[in-house]
Image (cartoon, rainbow, N blue to C red):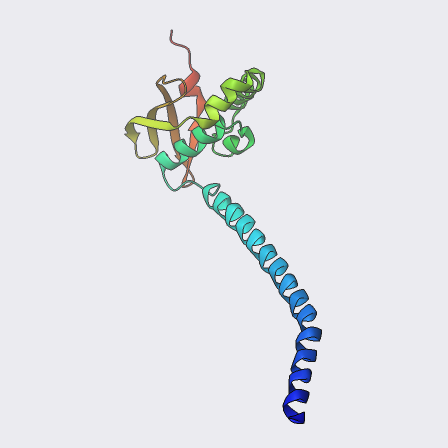
Length: 164
């Protein structure tokens, strides 16, 4: 009887003294696991953004990325997909100022808009014309894309040229 009672007291002592330690360890593990989950979430979000912000693979991809960046007000990213010359730089600057001066409701409308590609026309092996609209304004527009050094770039001079 003495041994079983001693064993029982010993087990009771272990449980009463180890329980707070085990509880503390489990709480720390929960915090650590939550931290890893949060970091994983942010890494996944950041990683997918990096994948979509890479170089376009083709003319349609370049057009889609440029239009999306412009609709979202990310003009620095849009400039990276654009043929850089003084006319195009001035055109994107004016477009950016107009975007910044429009109402918040219109900016949200553009950000939430989807892109609809209506037609693509191959002018030659390094030039394409993409006709598109966005679901916010539903107004057809065109972009000219040119392949320079294996990269497709938007040329805004075609889009914004004035008819004679």
